Length: 161
Image (cartoon, rainbow, N blue to C red; front, side, top):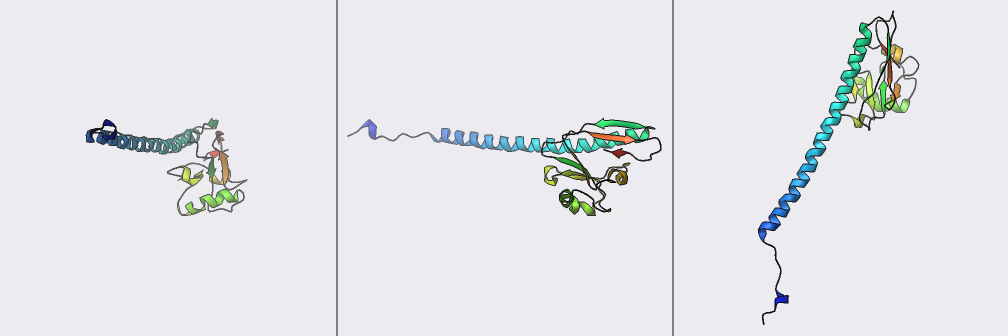
């Protein structure tokens, strides 16, 4: 009683193993692509800090200067804050609470929210943090706007608005 309908269908082991390997390679490729994208975002933050420092140095080396600096950061970064953590906090207490933990570092620029960047704080040279945070400390600018870098003739340091 040999009936063809009762026979079991089976795939050869080689085909099953090949499908398994394809799935593994696709999963590994997705993780590798995600890793490269994360590296791109962290380098974008590093380039932002470097370009901002170069713009500050360029303004400081001139007698007078006022120009806009375009902010180019990942979408997750909502604010760039300038803070004098050793002075009295006058505004944005909820934003201050996010950067208060960096008080132990010598930092004056912060990216909010902190988890949006690999390096959420930086200490920029040649900026007048006292003048920047004169009206409100911390002074925060939305990342969708541009920064205005200023230096007048009698200023030794650069201010940012």
